[in-house]
Image (tube, rainbow, N blue to C red; front, side, top):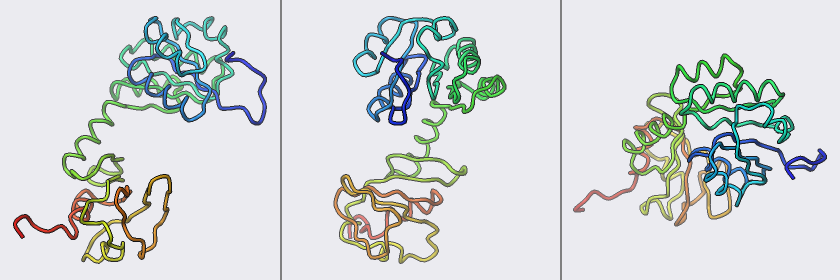
Length: 232
């Protein structure tokens, strides 16, 4: 059952309203991380699919306060309103979650105006998945060695990249030895190991993933250090 006696060792409970692609992906990820997840959607098919990996999947209207209370949604630690395409439904679901006492509500918005409305009616956090995906894609085209990106300013951010072949066997001191390189290597993921704040003596190994912070120009420049020009 979704409802059970609270205790200090219990898993955090999350309700996800709207099991489209974004909601289903979010619910699946949370479940894999050990959260107790309740998924709600008005359509039967996504509910049936989600029942394979969430704690409880329920078919119904996520704006129906009576339904949410019958599922004990008020006992959730976090509510995620993932039905951003339907403005009215997302606004109502956000309002109801706050009214019944869910302490932290995250709502998906389709655009800035939608986001402003959600903030005004009580959403604790508003996210723009499509816009964020577009930003990441745009930066990945500009800096083609990266496979994930978080923007910090219009021209700078955090980037994750697979170590290029020409990095392998080289130390960070060697890679940093480039004039005016305004960039920091924050961590290296080596299989299941995370090397945080790696030292200058750390040598890059095959299959390492590197997380760096800097301008797009610096990230691009960093990724080409030691690369032999074509034809050399």
